Length: 162
Length: 55
Image (cartoon, rainbow over all chains, first blue to last red; front, side):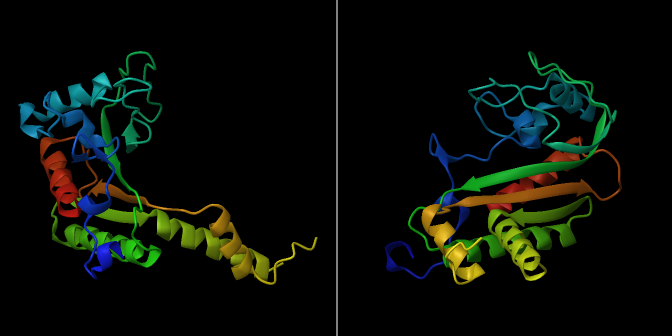
């Protein structure tokens, strides 16, 4: 528990901060980042303009592989199925995608595992609620804690079945 | 092979002690409800709304 206060954790309490902002990792929204580093979907006049930006395969301000954004880990249900992306420039021939994945990393800081799990549960509830209310998006949530529990349960099940 | 651990729980506790996991991530998969492409301004704005709710 941080500072001995029994308050629920917000993402901004535990997010990995870059220049005072929560780092959200590469996601579809990376393609909509403005030069100021803000997400600005309205910088595109049409859906076709947005698709053109995605097909450039670049966005954000990342080191390592530069500003190239790999399409494969972000989008699913893509057309063409045998998507081709240039590893040097990021350019790709994506036409459409039915799914997209976002990942919001956080660090534990001085919170307990229980407190972090409560945060994960709360985040999952937000996603489920959003999915029910949204007319255009289905939302599926998963967390590292959930995956670890599932993995541990699988191992335990395997051990019990030996 | 005898690992020396009494139980699975004890082994997991030992593993957590050796490899303390701090932090993690919230993973979100979004899918267009109509089965059409998600690469539209409308879908991206909805994704941004969802992200803001969690942030």
